[in-house]
Length: 529
Image 1 (cartoon, rainbow, N blue to C red):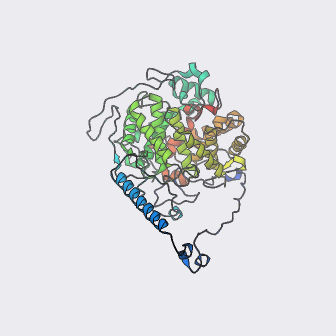
Image 2 (image 1 turned 180 degrees about the vertical axis):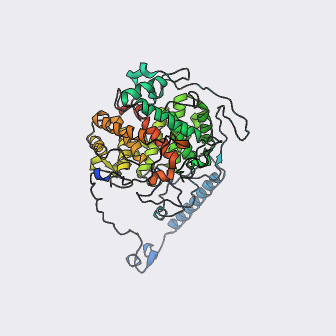
Image 3 (image 1 turned 90 degrees about the horizontal axis):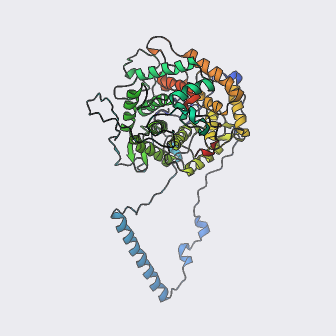
């Protein structure tokens, strides 16, 4: 998560919880990366008309000394015709015709790149947008005294999870038809089977459950979470509170951890926790002409909230969630930089790898939920990846080609989801870099993405990575007091997100065995996007 625009820096080393890349602790094992290519800046071009080139006579030299009467009559006639057309267009637009809309795209001024506070753009924040009352039909306890809605078990998604009765199926019977990267592994039976076959242990599964219990114990009365977990019933019993203010981002990342283990608002022991959380997320939805805005000040929150809602809809088929999930997708599509293909802090802003990674994962979640995800958006994003890659696509930078660990892990995972085959030479070389670097002792952002890359590729490199990552997380989980079940790693990103961020990321990392099906088993990525 990034900090508010008033405090963030555009440096790749800026300490936000899910943001810019880093230099990690285990530097002794890091392969030295090449210095960034030298560039030559060209002076700005300012086209202008030079008076000396136009001559001393000015525009009069362009006119003939004498004009025929017919020419003057024709000139007056065309001027009157143009004036009449202008008056007709003005009257049409003033009448509010829905067809008479002119939309212009502008690049953001360069000076806003380093500005602490950018002025609001009415195109991106419609002045008449309103927070909508959600139509979620969920049985949600209301601490504020509001009437609870009735639980709605909607028609499930057919041909997605293979269920027609609203329940997650036992997917052991469907293994031959699994689509790579899907959510099928989150069923109760499938979860245990996949955890065992893909590298999990009884201890890692216990760690997941303890982590989820810690998260549930720190939920706010209104259904949300805060990175500053002391605002919950914790009241200072757990150390290392975060500072990032986005309640939407904190709530969404906690919801993602529960969904990853197969829990939903219709099934499992955490139903009430998730009902309240999903209700809170929909309460934050800002309906705009460009989709549903969940930003609450940061595009990270947009991506995380959209992932949570898309996955909850895909897992349960609750149609009350569909419009919110599709609206989140629509806003992400709108917010893409049309020139470079990436995403950043504000809609239309030239992209960076960290924000773009969450946006593409949200689009992938939308695709798994059978929502509308334009193929042109994915095509344009591939162009962004090309602009930040080095070593022929084995390494990735933040906003340029200077490869770093976290951005390399993000870039490689995005390449997998947008079409690269397992034996692609750049992907193979990139995975070799990650294998050599190994897991980080404190950067869960890097660990989260790198673990997915290694798991999807499989093989001996994955087995080595998994043993190290799994045992390290099991050993570092808190076991005493109110902190029991949580994680905290002191580093610049984790400090912003605090114990809640670290716990959610650690849980999702330990869920890797079943959270998303391996991309390169049974079916290839040709089915993705």
